[in-house]
Length: 300
Image 1 (spheres, rainbow, N blue to C red):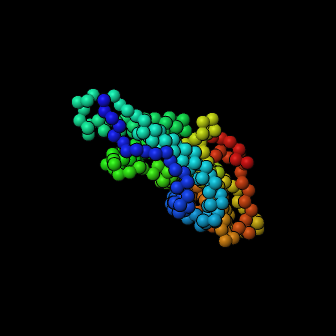
Image 2 (image 1 turned 120 degrees about the vertical axis):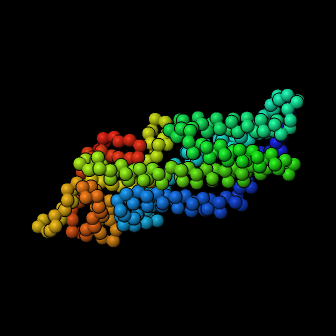
Image 3 (image 1 turned 180 degrees about the horizontal axis):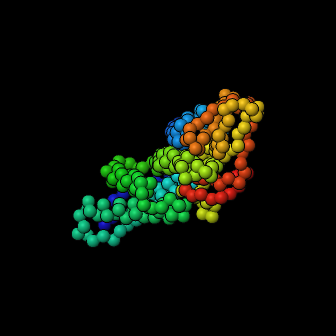
């Protein structure tokens, strides 16, 4: 029977996290914000604009989307990654495979680590399926590669002392937050922008309140992540006789520095007009468009 090949793995010492938690949290927050910022840029690039053109600076991005990104990261990165590493830890410390004595030691070790990795992936796979992520693709593939590298590292450092699982857990979940946002948000933002600007909807303007990804809470639907308000609107000059006349079927994207930013679906271009010179009437009853599906609802 093949014995365990893993070094002694003590229980996590959570008090040891205090010394590294603050700088690591700051680093992860900075990287996550950079990803969110890139996502905003990819969304507004569909309209030929930058986030600043519609008043989306760092302060407004954090105020309007920060809490959503935090909850999103907790639900779809910290919880599943923590559960995966906990399962990996339990299997690595307690699993004892009844392998034949004739098995070479390297093969026995590789077999055992393979079983540990597969067991660790089971709760992640279940969580992915329940939340709409799926188990096939780059997201789970990267987690699998990380578990394989972790197994190799633990095997190579046998006899080098106990593993500090407290710090390892913190680093593991932090990497999960970065990978989750990097994998989903930029692409979701670009698709949401495309949903608004694609020609098939030119005669039926669509609104957008949030960028969603396909990750969802069971029974709740896709989770809102980025606040990027787009509203179909009728826009007229306060001075009714002013020229040139404004096109019909405009989208109101926001304003910055006293300038209202609109998008003309027919000409596929942005318009900038003095905010104090126009009346913007948003159209109730417009369908809401997100990156995964279309549903006719009242955005009011």
